[in-house]
Amino acid sequence: MKTVRLDKFLSENTALSRSQIRTAVKRGEVSVNEKVIYDFSLKISPDEDSVCLNGEIINNKKFIYLLLNKPSGILTASRDKSRETVLDLVPEEFKHYDLFAVGRLDKDTTGLLLITNDGDYAHRVISPKSNVEKDYIATVDGTPQKNAVSVLAEGVTLADGTVCRPAKLEFLKDDTVRVTITEGKYHQVKRLLGFVGLGVKTLHRERIGSLCLPDNLKAGSITEINSDTAMLVFK
Image (cartoon, rainbow, N blue to C red):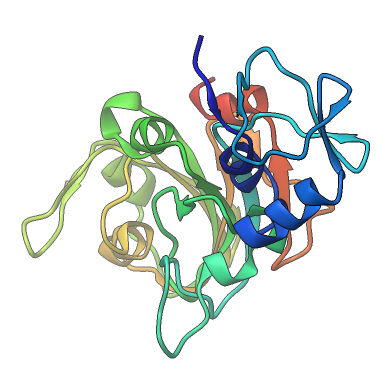
């Protein structure tokens, strides 16, 4: 049976600092199995013991999965000294987790971005071996090649030698297209569209696998999803 110190468990599963947790314990605000505990060094079993803080059950969350509607102008990075990053948008209640973005979106690209502390999950999502489809909506200008759809469907080699897997191209309007890819190379969607004669004005990711960006999630907002929802990217 795995055990952990009570203060460590609370620091990993709440937004409180260690000093705040110890103060709460000393005040009698923490109970284990309905018994008030005043010893913050008490060893507990996260899988078997019920821990409450001010009457609220604290669940043992090993992994966190967040869904962000990324706005334009925000860097997909863990930290930056002078510019705002996607992790700066994470609500305070999640900031004590060691979070990172799953893959990346360019600074001017908007839409669906996953944030987690589950490294294995992130690797599976971004690995080309997983064959996870990502849908992007682009507003474009220029005149496309007549065979643009078939060219991208066969896979292309860009001018610098970058080999891109087959991609789906669908024309939604004269100036709007949907691009579906199963990998995430540098500026890939923009470069693929440029390869067939289209310039990209705006780019928005709306889907990863079967996980879609919620219609009611505003730009810059984050919502927590459970593991079952997170796994929709593989379906």
